[in-house]
Image (cartoon, rainbow, N blue to C red; front, side, top):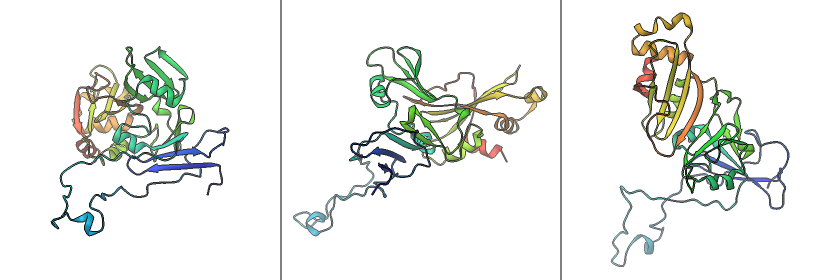
Amino acid sequence: MMTRGRLAISTALVGLVVQLAAPGTAIAGPLPGCSDQGWLGVWAATPSDASRGTDDFDRYDMSMNPQSVVRDETIRAILTPTFGGTTARVRLSDFLATGRLGPVDCGLSRNQVAAMLGPPDGWIEFPTYWCYGKLEFSFDPERPHAMHFFQIEFADGLSGDCEVLAGGKIVLELEGLSGGSHPTDFLRIMSDGARPVHVIYSRPSNNGTFVLQIVSGSVIVIFDFEFPDEIVSDLAALDEAAYLRQCDRFARLDSIYALRKPGAPVRSDTKFAVTAAAYLAAMT
């Protein structure tokens, strides 16, 4: 079935694909990429409720009354893949919608991250801040070292079809976005989700440096940059829509955060807020 010595599984629930090694096959050579072949989807459709069965014995009780039907309730289905994997392929849109980067989420402890991704490339503050290239983690200093947040740092360097993270453990499909994308590009993807999306931004009064954050639940996308000197003196007179157009024009992607709990913006110097719809409307 496989010509490259690898198998893969995926779930349509979070857009996750895992690349697997065939039994007894050593993993070596170049890091995986989005163009790699040999990815196989295991679940091709959303799970369906089979609780009522298909014959009369399952569909009716002993008095021939219909069995109960689930309405206005949530059913939690935990899918456990048959195979383990060495590489998770994740769509950026799914990460922005869920705050999960494939197997990585803010519910993990430091030891669980180490077991999953191996030792870090380095750390800023040991044992509380670990780095795996662009993927960085902040942990509580007290045992069991619960995760505060993780982020894709240096996101302005994202380019191509995908970004390989954590030494090849995660392949992030960029879906046309990059480090050069504007806030509107991210908003058009993030506004398709079920969670409300807001834009929180600063209006500098004495310099050209500004910060803009897209906030959706526990996910925050941060942009910042400096307005050119020749327009700084004109910013104060701009109405909100005109100012946001200038922000969108000059904003540069900085980082993408996933927080353990939705809360205050990562940057405290952002004091103004609009909805995603209002921001996009201001661009026209």
